[in-house]
Length: 421
Image (cartoon, rainbow, N blue to C red; front, side, top):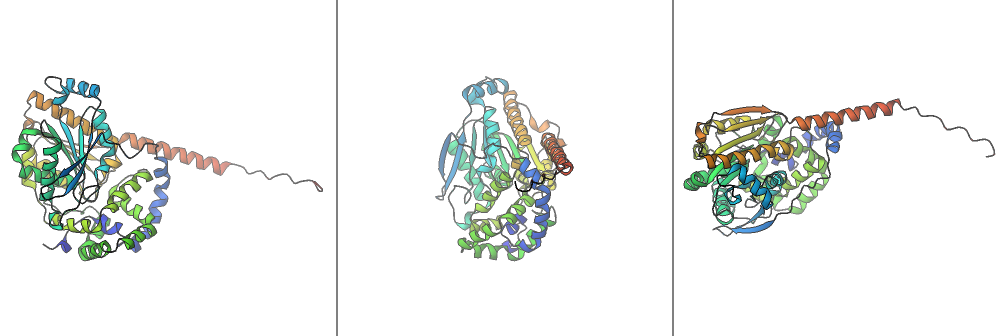
């Protein structure tokens, strides 16, 4: 099928300004409603993380992949090992490997990297080819199958032995399934846990979760490849467009990535990743989503502890995609989060952090106790980020009280100055 008919992410069209005229009025309205909450949610916490190690992984077709490793404090790792492994040795703990999605980079995992490291686990994250700090390949290499081979190369060099927990978001989850197809023995013997975060195994149209996504998808079907290719050849024009439409850009990223207020710094952080991806790379990846279907590969993960985690309001990979993953993996735990969109790791970080740490803990214990995971009952839960909601309600109450106090404040006239004074 032609990439022009590809049912892909509405965010690409919207972020590039194709929908500027339609969205401008909505943007102003949404900005007014959310500005206070976004500003109130700001914290001094830094969004960047300094890795303990940086690596360059060379693929067999000559692409350099940027990877980072986070190492836990030795005592923390020993404590984690005593509770989760057979002999209580830190080297028995699984390594967690994080794979990001389309148009993002390893930076999207900043909160999860901190949490997993603090829990005592070694963490490997990497930039997919054409993304972040990784090199670029031939346009024909921008396929899910090739990404599966890249993930295998990362594992070969950075996790040559020991147990592994794979975690993938969006295209990263698809990459895990490609690995399952290509390296069945490795996955069966060494992958003890898997986290499929806001992703799809195929069989359903992408970006079918709402009017904004549908509108963006239709624009891409008709204009996408031509627009992207044209702008890619004129990067200075695209840079000027981004400066002029910065507010609109942030609005479109927020609309397509999140379903609840997030700090403005997080919106900027996400926009920089999404729109920092070279336009020709964005364009060249589109065709790999056309007809994507790796549902048969789900069976390769039946032996592992599996978490399927998605947002109820995700308009790019709606919950129906996660339901198909759960159907293919008996015993998978399925968590659906209310008021959550596609970039859920930055929208509800504390919630995902807790579930990922639990996933790795359970994976290590299941390996140590030789639990037949496939016989475990399937669990599905719909959850709410209670802590975030409480904070938002408190902030709303404080803002309302401040507004009332300002309205009730009496402005006293200044006394007249005596003549001649």
